[in-house]
Length: 254
Length: 220
Image (tube, rainbow over all chains, first blue to last red; front, side):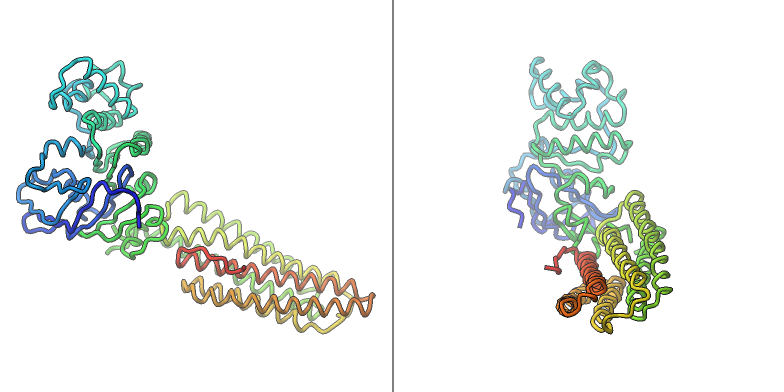
């Protein structure tokens, strides 16, 4: 039994897109200040699961959810929950870098400004702190007023991470953050993830099993909407308990 | 569920095949080395010595194959354990073949001298050691950890025979100092066979790891 603190816990989580059941009673803990990888073949429900953690699925029409998701022991679906605050606390980075069509500075300052911070000095500090935390400062410190879209793919993705960090989340959700990037940019982001996990809880969906193996401490294997196996990454990749897990990670299907 | 990565899985099958081949060569070397001693057959002994090169070459080939698979295919889980096990057991097999060669060299050294005693326990030790390798190979192919564990227990019998031979040869040496040289060589032979059986238990331990993912020390 893992003695460490749970940041999230899902309890019999079920999700329907219309008539299609995408998640089948998922009960999964997410350990705090650690990296958990979600793996599984296309369409298995891992991205759907990821999006339930900050209620991004609410934005999709026809979605029905039963069961519960606890964050720090409290349900995120309770009636009085402030969804905007939730999405500030639980940030998300997507597969394709999606900087806003504005300057590097304004991208990072966007979130804090929306939450009411207008003092220039304070914004400068937040922007620098976030960009440093995303291991991007040296590369963009003289380009803060340049359009964010003029950065390289890898830089843009780190910018998106900085943007998430600027609103001081506890949790960072990452949906295949490196799949659009070259190997060196991928390595930089993986290094960044390993640093960030000391202060943030990170959950990452990935198709790249070597990446899951390299960065995560826990891995959850999804198949057809079910959670097949969850455990320590080193054990899952050397000696998985379930044959379906074994078949997937050795490439016998997928 | 379609099977992907066909070439990769074929390569793992070929790896298993090579390992079996190596194991069978080692089995043969042990049998023939002791046979050459018991029958004072120097020609057979020379053959065993020469054929050791084949085992050495196989070790290098299999090792290369394993390292290549690691680098190019990033094996996981069961596949990882199959390849990791292969990498370990080729070392034990190669050492066993070396010991068989050492026994054959003693046959050559003792050419021209009659045996100071008929060999009974030494061939018996060799039979058990051979049987252990044979079972190890079967357990490896079947993925049978139980079989491997049972095989390891036969090492006790080999150790017992070794003690017996040791005492017997000591008595012979004390009774007739002219027999000391040959008795010492026979003692070496017994030692080599005892080492071979120990290596066989290593094979067993690795096969258990390959199947179950657990490392157990069965040679305590």
